[in-house]
Length: 514
Image 1 (cartoon, helix red, strand yellow):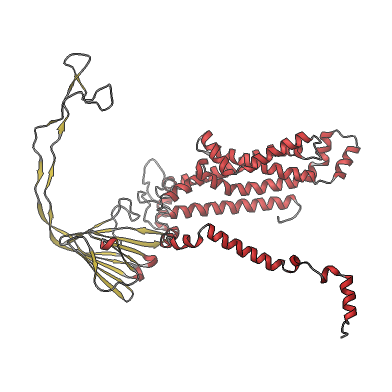
Image 2: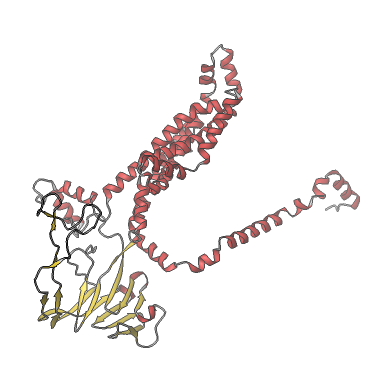
């Protein structure tokens, strides 16, 4: 290998000075860029208090909400009484009107159930007032001059004494012990004013005093938490659920994987029946309702499922698709001719160019969400507000894109058509449109696909569609499985329209794929 001498090195440096004598910014540009990004991140973290937000975040609640996307809870309450228990399920329990789950086992015994004495207050009868039209005619006890103005005397007692219901006692078979299995996570044993929690190798005994204070025996493991000075103890069993022990009851929150009653709700005659049984009933079984076939009844029960509301969700999803399609179609129809007015090489008038371009700037500078709020106030909640918001925003954006595409066309084709003696309209038709039409259609297809997602967002502010349905489910803080269901539907629709749009764009630009 031949070594380079100092004179040769000086000669090369003199020949290529930009390589050997680089400026300070050129030499340290990468380091400066990394430093600038680091400074910006530190500034942004301090400005938005990212550390405090993470520290104060309710991660347990967030985890519970995420778990609700793929699971559901059954919430029985076990109430203490003197010598016995009472197991209560919510009115609209996913287990139906008479739930008897195998994971909740009760031990019954015959005990004396005492009903406390009650006293009902006497009923007060309002006096009849004298009418003002006819002397002696009965009127109301409320004056007509001012709301709530009394015209009669004070309320008169009906003359009946207070009704007293004496205390009673009777022998009944009632639960005296209840054991709840939390799956592989552990178990809960409830007796009157005494609870035993078991998780893994840990066992916690809890007593409920006459003062309503919940007291645990011994040291508590990390999965047991005392709240409000002993008024409540919360025990976590992980994904399986949690238990809240209070002075008068034990609240069980048992979690199960899946979506409860997704096909039929508890009021349906097909509820809690296997797939084979349901199909046999639909195809060969006797009619459940004489005036309606079993197939029609099953479809009706599915669409009108009170818990999932499939029919309403599908209607709202259809509204979202229509909003995206109609809004994009109208925007394309208006942006197409206006873009010719905005293109400098098509319309030579400076005033026309500027007015049209500023119109595009105005329409697209206001976000689609703001337009949706505006039109919701103007037209009221519904798809019309969403269509108008998409139409206004996309008219500005597509008009801008179309005009820029027109300004970058090949002038040779237009000149060739003009040389044949064609009028200006034919020059644009045969010299310009064939060049830009694939681009225009491709951009419109992309915006149609994109607006399918955007229509969901603007629907949440009242512009109709599935977005409003999604927002209503989120506001309850309890129907997160419904949120997951609608999100999956939206993802499916977006995937379908993305595939269709990609195929069409690919055909327009002469390839098999876009």
